[in-house]
Image (cartoon, rainbow, N blue to C red; front, side, top):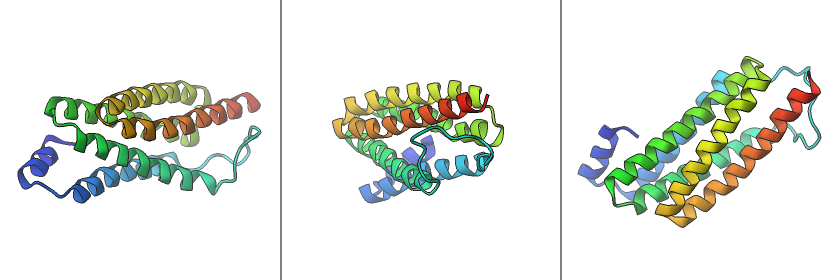
Length: 166
């Protein structure tokens, strides 16, 4: 979140629901941007066992983005230390950056091995964010754990697609 938005929130004392909508909305927009730049997977790839139906992905990702956006909101609201709040949001932004670009590497560019490498950084940044969020507001860190579990599932799928299609 930019300094301008933070100062507007603090100066105007936005209602908590408005702050939640902004944070969750930005998170959903980042996810939507990732899906736009990623496109769809080449249908010729063999899929690993436990690959769900295609309709599952947009549903679960949307739920995850709402969840992590809500976790960011909880942390933002709970943390009164401006420097800590800013650093938490910077780490959250770094994580969203890794998350947004993974579909580009995996789906659009078909860089299956590189996307595994990128996904590892995505998971590491998510763990850092979860730890930071947990220190500010325990429930926010716990919400992130559910999301991290989905990232590990994505890691399994990414590895499976790469191995089956070498």
